[in-house]
Image (cartoon, rainbow, N blue to C red; front, top):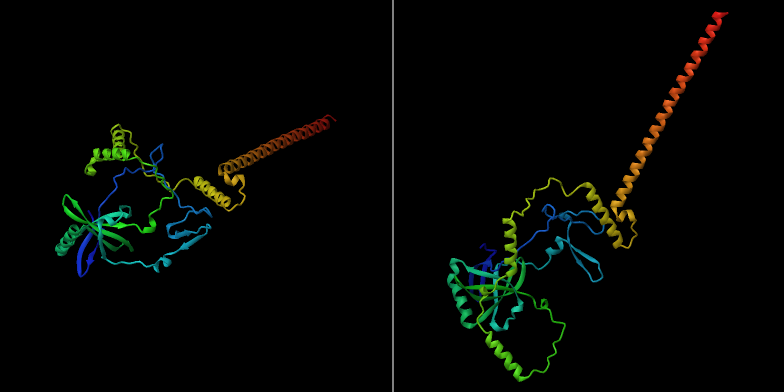
Amino acid sequence: MRAIWKGSVSFGLVNVPVKLYSATESHDVSFRQVHEADGGRIKYQRICSIDGEEVPYSQIAKGYETEDGEMVILTDDDFKDLPLTSSREISVEKFVPSDQIDPMLFEKSYYLEPDASGAKAYALLREALVESDRMAVVTVALRQRTSVAVLRVRPTDNGDVIVLQTMMWPDEIRVPDFSVELGEVKDSEVKMAQMLVETLAGDFDATEFEDDYADAVEALVKAKIEGGEVKRTETSTKSSGEVVDLLAALQKSVAAAKQARGEEVPEEASTPEKAAKKSTARKTTAKTAKTATKKTAAKKTTAEKAASKSTAKKTASKATAKKQVKKAS
């Protein structure tokens, strides 16, 4: 494991140098969105909903939307004034009975490992928590934000380890908006329910439970791999798509932005494909017209040449006739 935080636990005048490790990890099977035909990964563009333009990361800021739909833009300079802390101390505020902490408050768990110089103080804190059956309520700064957490002892295969569990703030716990109306319950029914509880009573062992869905998905993927149902994807040399597709996407984005503002959108703007077809049709018509004009001009030129040849022949015939008349006389 790799330590994600280094600091010390402070209680009274005692400091315990420790390292923090993530105690949990997800084993859920993750999927990627791909093109079904060739297995290519799906990419998304960061398009502004107002002007329809793609926005680079350098121009993206954080925004808070009000109840009226207005947007408050927050910059990096705004966040500089917030109460962030870089403290490397886990400060013990008090020790409370373990049964007073609602498990619903627990959020994320971390293992605490002592440095060599703090091994004795670590063991002292661990034994004090076990013997008193209490948890230590602490404050700690993780990722520059102060959180409330508890320290408790957890048995592991490598011995008892102190665990830090961050907690949610009280206002993050939702209150149910429904009420449960309790009907009348007979004593005989309660006794029967207690008998059922006793029948199913036992000690909790997490290893008795398995994630059947994850196992089934992994088996499915393995079977497809062994059956040769694998697409070898190649990295495309194209940027983000053809120019025509990008233009169509931008036109659709602009049309959507105008509709969001209540503006009228021409049918051609809302359907770039139609606009492209109409444009192509116009170009085709223009080409046809030009071709027809050229053909007509060619016909005229040919006719004119033919007429000139005919006139020349007639003139030559007349001149020859005149010469013959003169010779005869």
